[in-house]
Length: 236
Image (cartoon, rainbow, N blue to C red; front, side, top):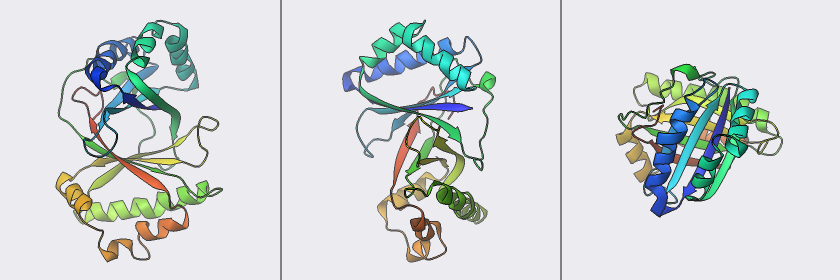
């Protein structure tokens, strides 16, 4: 399972047309087969970063499916679509991801992913991207797969969860930075998230033995994005 992760800096005047291009054209085009699907279409939450930022995550069954999709976009039936979409944005940053060994989500049955663009409720996600110290990728993965996972599990048991880890990804070798890990998390308590944004962490949350403290041994550079699914995003 490979995931094409793209961050689009959309031109404000073309925001609606950009949405329609993905919903009304790409979504059904990928639905013609079972090798690739648009999975998530999300917007950076207002007030949390650059305006008109859209994130898309496209699932490909394997490397061959990704190669076939690339051919369609470059000189196949999606080439004209790609050219029009490119004219609606200022920039697009892309990388190919794969689940780490301890990721809760390993595979997605692409045949079950909707391609109709039907509307539904909205969801919030927190995407944490961490850059471990040089040469420390495995040390970060080991600690995140134990201490971080345990920390979230304890919060859930105590009824204090703000987020739940759905997946953890890293870039495919040779396609992006070698030392990067993405934690893909669903926001399950929006009121608690607002409190977190408006207040400092209490001292116990950063004490020795906690993720916020002990993770400093394996990384001190990371970034969070708050993302809101579109009302028609296939997964949400």
